[in-house]
Image (cartoon, rainbow, N blue to C red; front, side, top):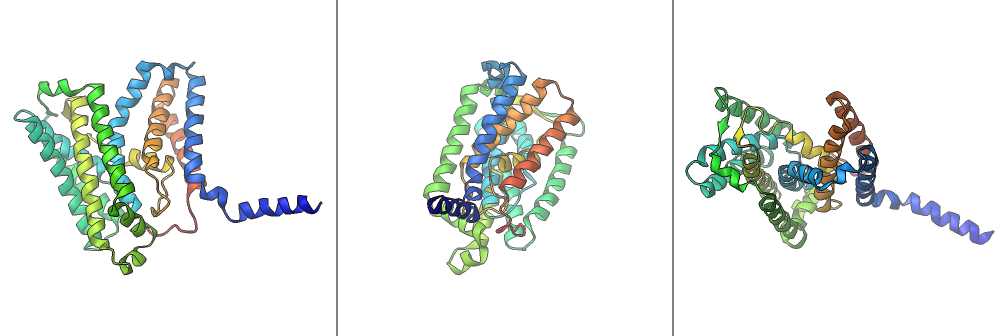
Length: 324
C-alpha cells in the first residue's frame, strides 16, 4: 500500500511539474503528422502516398519551406513577420524582369530585394521600437500595392528559358542547402544562441552584453533574403507574377510553424525541426483536403479547427508575452 502511494505521488509530481507539457512541442507535432498521414491515407485509399501525389505535395512545399525558415528566426526572437507574401511578390517581379538578361543576376537582385524589405522591417522594429506585427502588416499592404501597380496591365512574365530550372532535383537541392546552412547557424553558432536568448528574455539578453537591436534587425534581413531566394523557385514553377503573387503566404507560414510546435513567444524551446515537420504537415493537410473533394469553405474550416487545437495544446501560457 505504501509502495502504491509512492507511485501515485511520483505520477502526480510528474504532471504537477509540467513534464508532459514540457515535451508537448516535440511529441505532439510528430504525432499529429503521423495521424494526418494515416487519416488521409484511409480517406484516399492510400493514393496520397503514390509517388505522383508525393511529388505534387513536395512541389507545394519548396517555397513555403524556405520562407518559413526565415520567419522561424524572426519568431525565435519573439517577433512576427506578416510581409513575406509581399516580399515574395516583389522579389518574383524583379527576378522575372531580369531573367531576360542574366539568371544569376536575377537571383542575386531578388535576394537583395527581399533583404532590403526585411531591413525596413528590422529598422522599424529594432530602432524605431514599433511592434513587429504592426510594422510587417504595414509593409505587407505597402508592397502588395506596389505589386498590384506593376502587374496592373498584365502579369510580369519571365523568360521561357527559366523553365529548364523547373526540375525536382534542383528544387530539392536548393531547399536542402538552405536548410542545412540555416540549421548550422541556428545550432552551432553564437548567433543561434543569441536569438534564443533574446526570445527568452530581451532585457536579460541586453544585460548579458547581447546587441539586441542589431540582432533583431539582422533576423528580419535574413528572413527577407531567404524569401527573396524562394522567389526564384516560385518564378521557375509558375513562369510569371500576377498581383496575387505570394498572397496568403504569411498565413501559411504562421500556421505551418505553429503546427510544427514552434512556441509563439520564441525563446529557448524552439527547435529547427519545427520548420520541417510543420511545413510537411501543412502541405499534406492542404493536398489531402483537396483530394478528398471538400469545398474550399469546408477546407478552411477544418484547417482553422486543427490550428486552434494545436495552439491550445502547445502554447506556453506561463511564458507568453507581448510580441516584440
